Image 1 (cartoon, protein in one colour):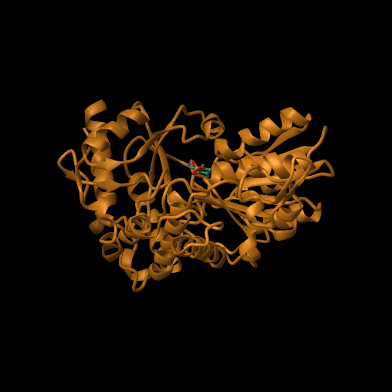
Image 2 (cartoon, rainbow, N blue to C red):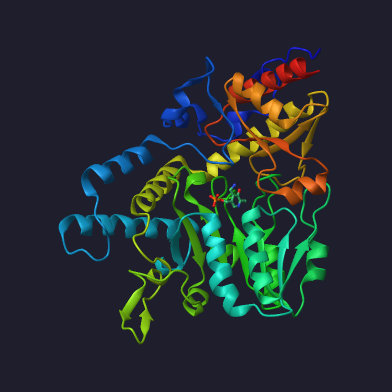
Length: 426
Ligand code: PMP
C-alpha cells in the first residue's frame, strides 16, 4: 500500500511562481480552451506536451478567421484575397525569422514538420554531398525522424551512420563525439533537446567542434523551441528544424532554417508549381529561396497559424516562461523521486520539460491507463526513440512533459495518479 501524498504545493521545495517573477501560469492557462474540459469526470491535466502542445484561443481564432474571411491561394493571384493571404503567409515567415533570429526571410523554409524538414535535407543536401565511405554522425538519443532519413541516405550512397554514445544520465558524451569527427564526416545531426529524456544538448559546443572539421550541423529543435529562446546565429548551426504543433501552433506546418548559401547550393526537393522560374520540356530553372523548396500549394493556414502562435509566445514572454518551466520540472522531479519503486530515465543536470520514468513491476501502458482515468494525459511507449529504450534496458517509459500552462496542481494530480497505479497493480 502506498501512502497518500501531501499536496505538492505544500511540499514543493522551490518557490514556483516567485522566481519566475510576473509570469502567471494560471493566467496563460485561461488562454487555452481545451484545458477547461473534464476527462473521466476529472479536470483535464494535460502532460503530453512533448507529443503536441495545446493551442491558445488566438491561434484557433486566426485559423477560423483565415478560412472565414481570407482564404485564397497565394503568390500567383492578382485579386484582393490572394494578396491578403500572401501577405499573411509571408508575414508569418518574417515572424519565424525574428523568432529564430535568422538573418533573412529566405532562410526560413516552411515544411510539414520536423520529419519532413530532416528528410528534405537528407534527400537534397545529402544526396548531393554524401558519397561512398562518407559518414553521418548522429547521437544515441535521436528521435527516429533523425535516424531513419540518414539510414536511407547511407544505404543508397554506401555511406556509414555513426553514433555518439550517451552516458547513464542520458547525456551526450562529448569526448566520444570528438573522437568520431574525422575527414570522412559529412554532417552532424543532433537533437537540441531529447524527446525521450529531456536532455538539453550543448549545441554551440557541438557546432564549434564540427566546424573545426568544416562539417555542417543540423539541429532537431522539435523539443527545444517550445521551451527555450533559440538564436540560430548564436548557435551558428547550419540547419535548425522544428514543428509548429509542438510550439502551440497548428499541425501540418514546420520550419527548416538553413544558412542562405547552403540552401542556395542545394537542389530542390519536390518539383511542381511555385518552385520554378521557367519551364520548358527541355529545361526548368528554379525559383530563388525560399520558393525553390516550397513546391505546390503550401500549408497556408498552418503558416499563418504558426505566425499567430509566435506572436502569442512573444506576448507571454518565452524567457520568463522558461524560468517557470525550469522550476516546474525540478519540483516534479523531486516529487516523483519520492515515489517508491519509481526510477527516472534521463537524469542529466541540464534538462527541459520531459520526465520519463518507469515504476517497478508496472507496465508503462498500465500507468498511462490509470492516469487517464484520473484525467491525466501522459504518453507511454518508446517515444519514437527505440535506441534510447535499448540503452536503458527498458521496453518503454511513461512520459510526463510539461508546458508553461501546467501548474503545481497538475503535478499533484500526476503524483496522486501514480500512487493510485501503485495501489491497483501491486
Ligand atoms: N524530433 C523530435 C525530438 C521529436 O520530439 C519529434 C516529435 N515527437 C520529432 C522529431 C518529429 O516531429 P513531427 O512528428 O512533428 O515531424
